[in-house]
Image (cartoon, rainbow, N blue to C red; front, side, top):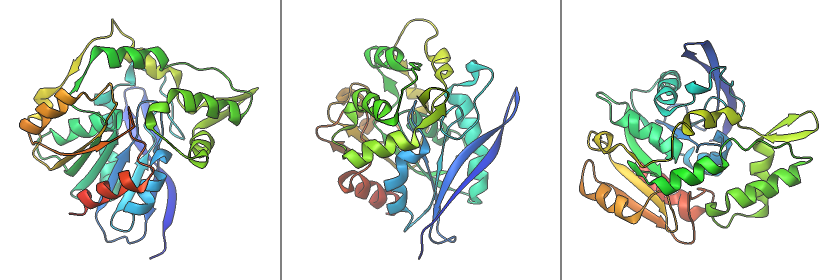
Length: 283
């Protein structure tokens, strides 16, 4: 069937009022199950273009821009940029699918959002893919994230912005020139004097409260009952080998896909990463 790509928004309710959360729907067949793909901390839903195109042969694929990123609204209150609130924002998107159950693919922050939703009673998450994230994040990784999140220069052109992306996201692994260019093209806001990353720098406010510390949510992991695939960059500093070992032995357990030569986080932009995700979700 012909691929149809539709940009739309859903309204999400915050204490400051309704805010619009943008998303792209990749669809070939309206009668197949639905999947939701949620990006990492400073990224946007277009990171999943290649995965969504492939997965759309089997699923209706929704790729949102979390609030404060991409085409979605910013928040007036920066304290609203936190994972429990993001999880609540996903409820109207899940409802938009019209499905009782959805598959979930989450990179880093998007994985933590999915983990939280999957741990709830009567969760609609049917199968869960966690891309380089788990129920424990070490202090050192949190410190690294705190160092770069909120950095908000104005770039004179997209080439300069792309250079920044290549440096900050080098752990994504070997991407093609076209893929780096697409990340810049799809991940900027045009402003007076040049270009900015399509990410509200205020998302750093909540993250930078207090000192960097380990983050552990094992109590959520232990409540998950759906099948889980965990993807790990073999050089990741965020999802450690010992964390993955413990994940395999408690809670729902998990299947594992390790990507050599990649840190945090695999970009899910080549067949060696995309095909196993599609196979897991359609098993």
